[in-house]
Length: 83
Image (spheres, rainbow, N blue to C red):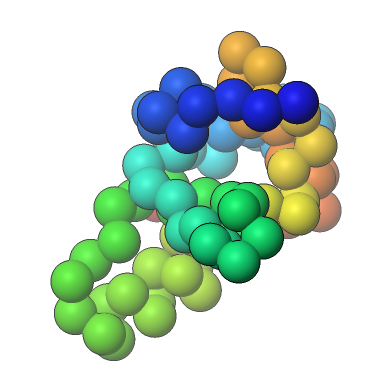
């Protein structure tokens, strides 16, 4: 199944236990595979150090996504620092 990436922007992200994580603000794409690599819950900042922090603290590996319908559902065990 394929979907337009633009459809995912702003989508709510929840754990599979129902905890709200944030909204999909940006995406990291793997152009070799043609797939999404990460979902960011805040826009990727321009500075190198800030970008590294955002990738580490404010992003979700796409392999942890269980479902994309009306919301994005991610694996329960995944935790992000409080916003």
